[in-house]
Amino acid sequence: MRILVVEDEPKTSAYLRKGLTEQGYVVDSAADGLDGLHLATTGNYDLVLLDVMLPGIDGWSVLQGVRQLHPTPILFLSALADVDDRVKGLRLGADDYLAKPFAFSELLARVQNILRRGPVQRETFLKVADVLLDPIKRRVTRAGDVVELTVKEYALLEYLMRHAGEMCSRTLIAENVWDMNFDSDTNVVDVAIRRLRAKIDDPYPLKLIHTVRGVGYVFEARTP
Ligand code: CA
Image 1: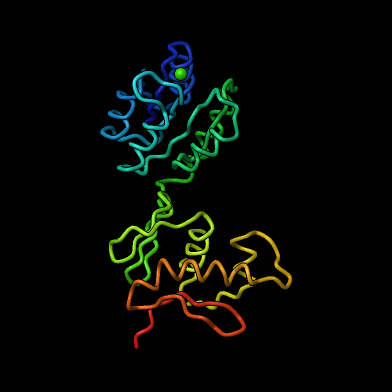
Image 2: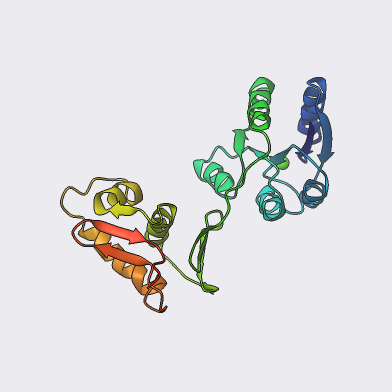
């Protein structure tokens, strides 16, 4: 198993290298973002340990750069105890994070966990007819046109596409997209569907959102 350590503090880098080598891993290291990105995208690593605050380009940019090309698992190390930063890292496609300072035993447990999962199966695009949804970039296109959606419209579309061809009741949609129970007021769902339709269906001849009267919606391409 080969691990790349991208960390600019020599002490931390040496500590990680020593500890991981003792555990039988083959360790390479990079001391700045550019080197890290280069090695991570050209070397064949089973895991990248990535510090966030790096000279050159920061860890977020390295993470994005690697993610565009490789499914290599990434564990990021952040001195920033901020929840927003952790969320940001995970959103950008990191597999896990560890806040500094950390105990080596915890780092090792997380490394082993990630490696145990084996080669990563990256989620691919969702596709229904000519609608493409990229769950990582949260980007939607129809017939090649980028469709700009609000956060809720996107969540609604993703839910419908994940259940393409199935009956999605208003109640289920409300629970899954709004994370709450709309006892009677599922009007919220209808309003959101109307907005989504205006963007994703109205400009195109083939309609994908179908109303099931009194119940909910089905997202599918129906042959006329
Ligand atoms: Ca650093």
